[in-house]
Length: 476
Image (cartoon, rainbow, N blue to C red):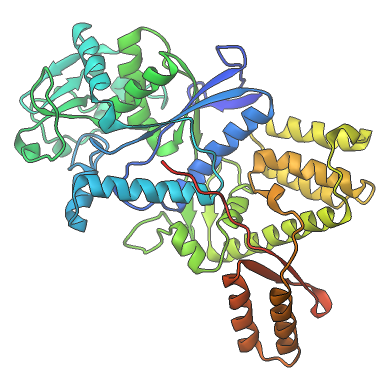
């Protein structure tokens, strides 16, 4: 397995510290607003990495955090707590806001068929671990205290800036002094480990006792405290978006390595940005879309996942509704091919693969093991499915094998008995289409869908009926 490591800025051979067990930490959501397309792409790419590692024989121990306190609107300790702001805007409590958006996040990743981590850890449930870590940093001389907060002194950590490729002297001149609220803060790059419940945070709803007074943790300390609790002082892979590199992940490295004296992360895995119509996502542009917006456009969530598979995780991706519709059509054709293979042959034993089929399998492994070249894997899958020299049972076996990585749920496309009532409706719709009564045909299609089935139009006015594809539900 070879992966691009942000820390070294090159593709390196990956081998976990503990034989075949991979310790994997992903930055989870700050649950103050809806999970949107940008988040979806990040978590799908993280899921592809986890699935690939598993496919290649590794055992993945996956931990994800839920940030429900401490993340300010400015990642550099400026602004206000995002959860508090969201609660005030909605007229709800911070607990209600966090629970609502956590559930929305879980619903979103479930509909995208993203594997749930073995451990979900909420920041508010790990305050003591954060306090203990800050105490270690204090004892080692990496902190200082002001009237407003306890800060990590970045000038005392020699390696600060190594993830983003900048040293401290290079980072300092670019900082804008006017954004820093705490006038006692020594350096622009210093970051808060603990905020005191005074001044701008005097009325902060979430607060705990600590050696430095009543208050709440900073955003960065939570990931270090929770990842080390569940995965150890050094973890194999830490995933997140490229926007986290210059501040959040840089700060995680500093506080973690200052506390333990050990490397914090061996491989940093970062996803690049998602653009919408070649623009950044923003509320002012009205281009922040959620899973509900996708379904309102009659697009399947898994068609969006299929769309994400066609862009490498380290490249900027541009989303448009036209490209989403094209992905829906491509996903429909893929499902039709798989359904046809199910109809032709139920034999899916991998032990019966021919030499040629095994070459496809080996090539797929080579592609995905090369820094997750999933788009190439999709191209290979289509070439294999169209290869008439492979018998149906081998093509079916291979695509279901590949889908362990793709995560498109193709194993669920099995043949099922269709009720006669649904067939009668389908025939009625066919007759309506023949006389060009498309309004009636659409109404019948909608009725068929309410009964739990999908109808897909083929050539020569033929059709295919199958049970509606649903992802499984999962509770938090």
